[in-house]
Length: 534
Image 1 (cartoon, rainbow, N blue to C red):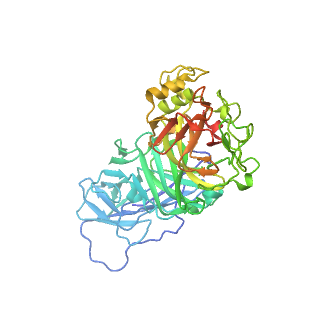
Image 2: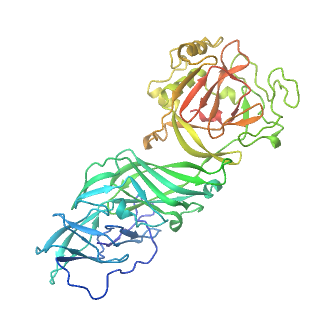
Image 3: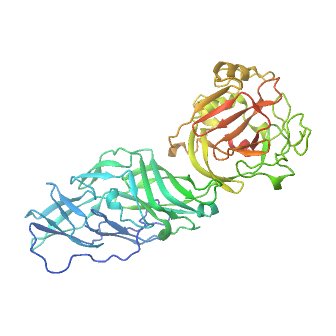
């Protein structure tokens, strides 16, 4: 049955009761003349010591800010069960704070143990906290009964032979409250939320009078939101986009991935990607835990550099810089020997350096050496995800995360004089680079050393151990290429002491990352690349 529970909440508390619907609940008990009921009647109602939801679609009502009351209601189709697997359905037609349940058998004992195992239950004591939960409207909790809400009660016999009870709930509940000041996020809708834990938070559990037991089977809960929730609020707005999920009680470290759909800011049309947040806390049975989140995304520079160039690619020609894939302009820095305006070679200017040593100019000089890049690639667990970002006024997605050098050092996978394939660094003739490609590179010239990416989301404990390389694309011969599908990052050196036209980049894709033996220095890298490697 449905009861009301008051939770006093501290403003700064991790766990506080927060809320859902702000529609007034009405008593939906069936009225009018009825045939005499067979068996035993159980009446569930409001009491100050319970917080619950029931059968088909039990719901709750709670309003921020703190210090408010959580109200739970019965929904049509809710059922209660007894330990002999008998069940009775709520005799109501709409949402109600109280409900009668008619069991098909007679009970005479002073008390009866009751179970509410959730909407889709087939056993009195088996609860399934769903791995996929669906909320069709913002700030609405009518889905919780199907998502894993559960509870128990001790029913007490009355003088007229009926039983009365108040339900104690044994699942925990999350209320997600996103906000954003980012205009790209504000023009998007949240269509899905993934909740990823380091331990199990969903699956099958056993319902007992004192709570849930069992270990569950899933570390992930996915909450879908129908046509999507707006997120154009700069401060928490419960009525606009509060999203609720049932979760197994316990202390959990969570990665929360908000999936957003944007139809206006990507040059190719609709784009779907993530904004990732982290939360750790104790999730208590019969308690709604609010988790607020400020959704923001990285905005990257529009400045790109050729290998070792002193000036950026569009220096002096910013007004004609192409800013969408496929865009082209002739005012690009030409290659060596190109004397034809408007894209002649600019020695010491926008064009690449001809050095046979390391790059002399930032940002290329600040990039990792080839050997360092092999450690990142081979032992950095390169992991692809679909995090959103902006560059040059448009919204894109895609990045690869890799372990920081400090983490690799701790794990014994870092050496500044020997690369990840056992070749000792040779500063002048770069034979370590040449020999590495000869030994492990694939294909014909230019050979590549590649490594597959993982698509397993990182955990909460990984959050500070990785850095991200977004798919910022490149410019080549005046054309913008591959933003949103590829990342291009120079190393700080050329291939060897004899190749003054080529250099060695790291290129990243959804399914692999690779180091290329020699790539024309005419390719340009986003200047932010020099600050990303950690």
